Picture (cartoon, rainbow, N blue to C red):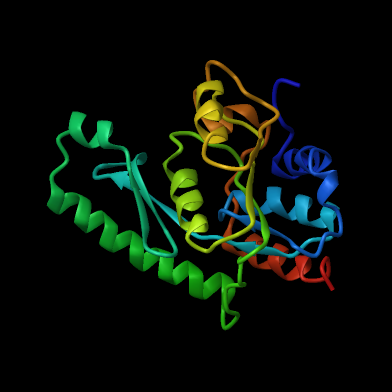
Length: 216
């Protein structure tokens, strides 16, 4: 396999690596929205496990928002790419401005995706954290750090693709790391999908609603 057809196909492949967790009542699947949701949906469906979102926002470099200088997670956990900040000489005021904007967007998404439903307790749970791939690692590291504060029994990260060296880093941070495609020359997450069209909010709502039946 040199690439995935789409996020759904990637999720089905990851689900085969997680068969040991089928119908376990201590398992919850958490997706990093938006792109992680279609991947995580297929995993939750195969495992008959509940699906929820764990919201993490990339902190983009001012003027170059696609480049991550860090990330913020939903329990006020921050991760910074210190090398990028130093190399580009990004001032503290600019970093604080981006943090302020992303905190607002994080709160907006939390409200839109979850509505009046409270975030589930993760204490003592086996958490499977899912995204559609890992690029700089800032978003995933922020998510992992935030999850650890919520005291799950174990954290499994499942992603379809990440650079080989990034996989080595991530494996040291969690109890189990699953990533079938580990290219040495990575380029970008989207390069490893035939279809990497943007996941819209409406699809996220639909999949979260559909997933409620998995754990009933």
